[in-house]
Image (cartoon, rainbow over all chains, first blue to last red; front, side, top):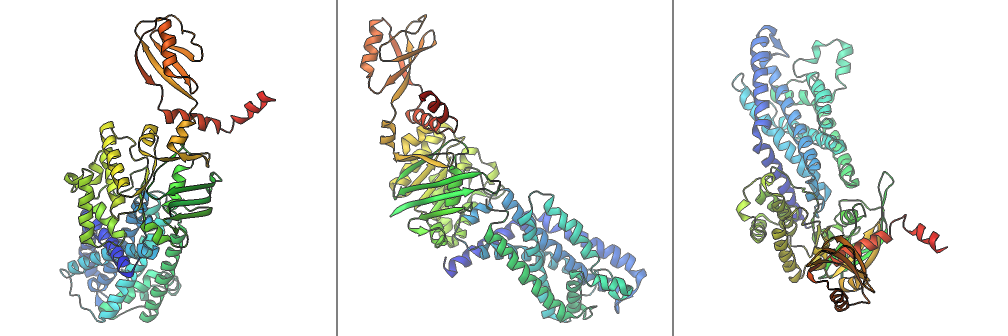
Length: 257
Length: 316
């Protein structure tokens, strides 16, 4: 395939993915908007008033970046894991496998589709947060870099999960039992400075801590971790996950007999 | 140049099942080729490997001169596949499915839409273009898969049971459509359980059983191998027992129906002379089975693992 043909094929997958999650918007775009609004009302407004400042900001301002990042993570992952597993389940993955499209185009197409949903939800949640607090951006390029790389990383995570999944239970185990706890314990709702030394050290093993804090640095200008180290770590993970996913796709793991 | 060349193709699945035991097959350009075999014989595995959906264990496959290992993208560009099972997104619209498939082949949207319209019209699905695929009938879904397989205009079209579950009228119209495609110069490979379909459409045939090609020839030569043909005769009045006719095996199906095996060495005129001599009038006559079906059953039975042993015992 020529470079132009590969570009057409890539755009076809991305458009197909965007069409899918916008067609079922009550399942994909609406729930995170409602959930995050509830977080803003309950944790930010009602409980947050009693908590007071955190990291030098009022509590609502402090949790908004984390909640945006949480939406991006969950939706990037959720989009690819459900979409790619569905194509396996319905055998419509065969439409792509019989075509001359290189595997990296298939992988990149799904990942960009997942990023599109993650960032669309992130944008919706950001706009909703404006009803509750002022949202400024201290470091625009860091904010954008973190969102792009994090959504890519969790799209790849969703792809890997779907590659090995054999049934619908397999695509809900990681989001429910790994992703959600790591996100809640990833510094979305609190500063690591509140933790005793031991638990602070344990928390630093959690990769989501670095994404949430890097994003918070981009928006508020404060972080519990070194932002550039965080950006570098996310990039390394993206490269490792992409290489692994492409290797599995080339082998035909989970998709070819 | 051949449309499809398969050399010593082997496939052993992870569970140890040896689905293909080194098959060789050549399909010439422009041919209408039938690949027949009982369930589990290796047809779908062969098609799966040719269409890159199944990894082979060893062997070589080339499509219109392009080696599937070394020139995979070029080989895939030339082949269209209509699988046995419905494999499109059930919630997608008919038109979108065909246009999207064209996109996977790098065909720009404008051309993709034109081609989708052309093939959906030809296959009688244009009125359904805005419907979700899941709302189509079984026959419509099969036609949708044919339209989708044609959208990149392949030279070689492989259809795995394309008329399974399709009513007779629609099956005939699909035959006409496939004949038209073949006349335009496309090579067609077909697997089917309707042997009448293979006999009507295909010029060459291969029979695969237990992962091996047991017959590979042109349809005429194959049918000539049929030594005995069985006919069903409906009599004008009932009889109490099967008549003894020299040179023919006769069985009584019911009081007014005979089943007669006619060897190739005998002719039907002689059969009717014998019947007339016994004052048996025949009101109608038909083949017990399609000729190819009769041959197919014999070939596959010969190839059954348990069949060879008793014959040797009797001989010794």
